[in-house]
Length: 341
Image 1 (cartoon, rainbow, N blue to C red):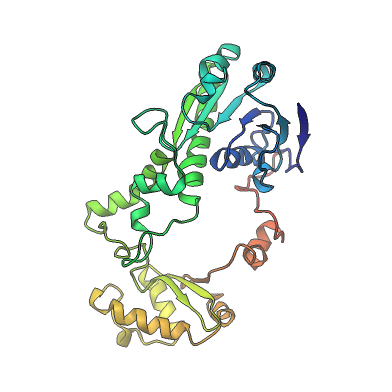
Image 2: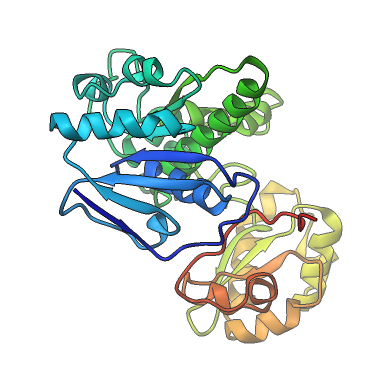
C-alpha cells in the first residue's frame, strides 16, 4: 500500500469539504474526478501499481495504491467509505460486485453514499458487457455518422464527444443532482451513466432540426457540418486555418466586407445553388494571406471568423491569457465562480 499525492489545484471551491473515492479507470472516470477536484472536492484515486498516470487528469488528487483483488484492500476501501460522499467507478458491469465493492456493499456501509457508475453501453442491455471505446459508443449513438467529408468514412472527433461529453459530464450532472437530492432525503443514490445515452442526449439539436426539415442523414450536407460556405474552415497561405461561423446575416455581411467581396456579386447566403462556387471563392480568398494577417483583419469584428489554433498555441492567445494567465502545460480550471465573502 502506498499513499502519494500529485500537485494540487486550489482547495477552495463550491465542492470543498466533499470526499470522493475514484476507483482506477481510464478516460472519462479520471476526467470526472479531475473536474470534481477542480471544483474543490478532496479526491483520492485508487490505482494499481504500474498504472498509467496522466498529469492533468490526476491534478489535485491524492493517490492510493491498492490491489482491489486483495481482501485487505477491500476492507480499506469499505472503511474509507464511512467518511466518503461520492464513489466513482468505470468497470464493466459486475466487476465491482465481484470485488465486493458494488453499490449494495458500499451503501450498506454508508447509506448517504452517492455511487457513480460510468460505462460505454450502460449497466444493462445485450451489449452491457461488451468491450468498446469512444469511437464505438459515438458510432452507436448516431453522432459519428454525421462527422467528416461526404465522400470519406466518418472521422472520429478525438474522444471529446463520447468519453468526456456524453460520459464524464453526464456522470457529474448525475452526481451533483444526487447531492442536491441527498440534502432533502438524507439518502445516497446509484447513478448509471452510459456514454451512448449521454451522446444521444446531446444530439437533441439534430433531432429538432430534422423535425423541421433542416437536417438529414447525409454527411457534410447540413447546417453545422461544414457543408455551408459560411460555416466551415479555410486554409490560409501559410498552411494555417481560419474558422468561419457567420450564421447570422449581419455577421455574414461583415465577413464579406472584410474579405473585400461584394455581397451582391457573391450571392445570397442561403442560395444552395451558389454554395459550391462560393466555397471556391472563399477558398481562394483565404489562401491569399497568411493566418496572422487574417487574424489581424478579423480581430475587432463580429464576423465570427477566428483562427484555428493548436493546443500548444491556444494558451498564448490574448483572450485565453486574459482569463487564465499563460500556461502552456495545463488546461485551465473551468468554470469560474464569483469570490466567496
